[in-house]
Length: 280
Image 1: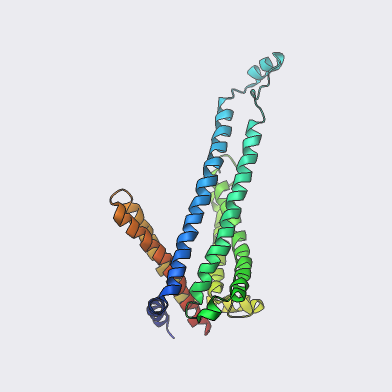
Image 2: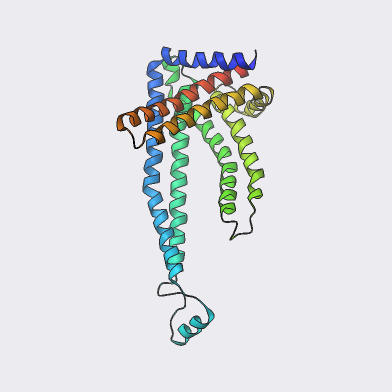
């Protein structure tokens, strides 16, 4: 089966599945809304605290006028050269670390539970109601999705760390080229791991790595084309949101719903592609 035929037939089948399973797709759509809503909420709660702590530490550091001469004078006058509250920077640093941890943990939990449910219903949209809503099947899928999410988060964490370090390359011993290998590793990890997600509950977990490697290497072109189609549609929908953000509130709402639809549809479409390529 040619790459073009797989992509086109999968596009047609994805919309046909949505048409035949409107209630399940509505559930996927609602979960997708909930996913983005929760992500926004945890960011709105934690990010201001992180930014405020960073601002307080920076403002305090910039207010200090530390040089050998003034430091000696302050010491003779029994004043602390680091200001009236020398532990302020340390306290704010601890707050930044704590709130960053809570933020990342919350996002990871939302990703595993909500996004895991979205992928479960998307990849099993054609299943009968009894099997589809079986608690045993859902928990089995989520447990595997949790493992996959951990594996995916490792290269992404190191890439993000390298990217931040490179952003401060003028202060740290880091070069822009340092994160290129990690970028490649992260891209490869994303490429293969997302292939595994639609078939997590379709094959034995111990055979998953071999299966996704086979699909990813032997069917590189249709997989990449599918990724590109999804990325282009997502970027187009997001661009539409930013374009309409100050023009028309009603059209903006339509654009937001369209973007959420694209995210929900993309999971169904990619699940169809992977199942065709895997022969399941």
